[in-house]
Every structure is written in structure tokens, then in C-alpha cells.
Length: 380
Ligand SMILES: C[S@@+](CC[C@H](N)C(=O)[O-])C[C@H]1O[C@@H](n2cnc3c(N)ncnc32)[C@H](O)[C@@H]1O
Image (cartoon, rainbow, N blue to C red):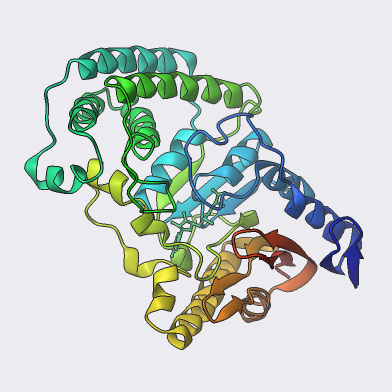
């Protein structure tokens, strides 16, 4: 059925199980800033709203959750808080680092060692005269003031030399400050904007973020029910995911078509962390594909949608649910509908439809409206 919500005179569509469709509309409407647990620790575009993740998990009970496009791990954080066994996959090594840190079950002793290592690294970085290795310096000097570059190199070396169990957390802390202290406008804009930050800013920010991560991990740990296994997160193509066990729920927010270039967006972080082997060509829905030709890009995205949905379905136990949150895309030629390819993908994957909610949202940047959808399917 189609209704018009009185408030903003925007349209919404609800189909199937009425109660679940209503709850899915609520999930799509979540917009309040959230500070709980590790949410928001590291910037990243297009994260699902934590309340939406929490409510959708609650709507589809079971023991386990898989997110094959895990990004920063929002869904897994909420899965852990709900006591689920959690699995995440993503192509981006940076996303994997963030998701692992944000779902970490590190105990207080480890977090204390992390903070103490961070303090030492910060002290050394404030006196740093180091420069990054020549191969990466040439790229990085376009993005940082020389003294910032020098501090960051000292932090990087300190992080790389840290103990193996705290290093992944410190790498994520390091990653979290790299755009902020650079001349890059933001994660999503590669525009250069020179600004001055006093010497020592990068070092102090690093320590501040290390303490913040420690606090947030402890906050999450306090609510995760005892006996909840660690999240299992790996770098892998969503189109080929094959877990050792079947799950009750696949909940995910895949890339919207032609909206972001997720992997190239992490350019600065990849250079600093010397990540060479990214698999950019495997990215689903990447905006850059549309620049090379609308028809071919659309065809490939539709086929990728079907492939990853089939893979997701193969990891579901019979009776399990696949729940997808996705918005329409935009190209210079107009909007790209995400709903039809998703419905076709579900059919090809042998899934049956349980409920659907679609809501119109104002898109202020384009002065228009954009549809956001939530689909719930079940494996027979
Ligand atoms: C919309 S984001 C996910 C956001 C996530 N739900 C969250 O709340 O943080 C989409 C993610 O898909 C990843 N991605 C793109 N193509 C992929 C592929 N073929 N396999 C796995 N991950 C992919 C991107 O790296 C990006 O992290």
C-alpha cells in the first residue's frame, strides 16, 4: 500500500507484513546523533544509522548476523550488543581495520597498555624530525605541512613497532586522524584546502583518540552478553562469501549505485599504512564506473547485485532472513532505481519477500528527493 506521510509531504511505500514494514520505516527514519559504544569513532561515509541496525536486528531474531559489506562495522557492533555471533566482510583493508577495532572485545589490561603506548608515541612524535620513506613522502607532502608529516611519521613508526595485540587498535587510531590533520577537505571530497594547525596538534589528537577508543570499547564490552563470540571479520569480496556455518540473518547496507568510490577514497590512509594490494576493480556500484559509460555500469551493477545476493542467500539457514538497506543512486543523467534490481536479485537467489519499506528523503545537496529502501526476504 502507498501512503503519504503528513509531516514532510514525502511519499512512502509499505509492502508485505505490515508490522515489519512499519518497523522498517522507523528504522529508515533514524537520524539522531548516537554516541554509544564505538559508533562514530572513525569517520566514514554512508554508515547505516546505529539505531536502524539495532532495530532491524531485533526485528529478525536468531543467533547470528553476517554483513557482507561491513564498512565501519555498525551492524556488527549492534549484533554484539544483542549477543549475536557476528561475521563481516569487506574489500577495503581500511574498513576491515575499523570494523575490527569497533567490535573489539579487548579487556581493561589491554586497553591500559594501549593508552600507555599511545602516550609514549605522542611524546616522541612531538619532538620528531623524521620524514616518511621517500616513496610515500612524494605523495604525502602534497597533503600535509612538513611538521605535520614529521609528527605523523613518528606516530606511524611507533604504531608499527607496538606489541602485536595493541597494534591493530593503534593503527585504527592513527587512521582516524589522517584526514583531519591533512589538507584534504574531507573523506568524501579530495579537494585541497590548506590550513594551519599548531605543531603538536597531530600528536595530541592521536593520544586523545586512543583514549576515546579505549573508553568506547569498554562501553561496548559492558553490554555484550557473556559468552558472545568475537566478531569474525575478513577482507573478502561480498559476491563470493562462503562461511563455514549458515547464519540466521544477513543484514547489510551495500554501496548505493554511482554514489561513492569507497576504495580510492581511502587513498591517504592506504599510503600511510602501505597497503599496496587493494582490489579496486572488484568494488560494487562504484561511482567511477558510471563516468566510463552509463549502460555498461548499470549492467554490471545489476549483475553484481544478483551475484552478491545469491552468495548471501547461500549463507542463510532455511528460514533465515536477508535484510537490505539501500538508497537510489544519482548520475548526471538522473536517478538510478535500486529497488527493481534488488527484487530481481532476490528472485534469482530463490528468496521470498517478507516486507518492504521505501521512504522519500530530501536530498538537500541536489535540491531534490531520493528514495531509501529496506527489503526483508526469507530463505524458504
Ligand atoms: C555503504 S558501505 C557499508 C557501510 C556499513 N553498512 C556501515 O554501516 O558502516 C559499503 C561498503 O561496501 C564495500 N564494498 C564495495 N564493494 C565490495 C565488494 N565487492 N565486496 C565487499 N565489500 C565491498 C566498501 O568498501 C564499503 O565499505
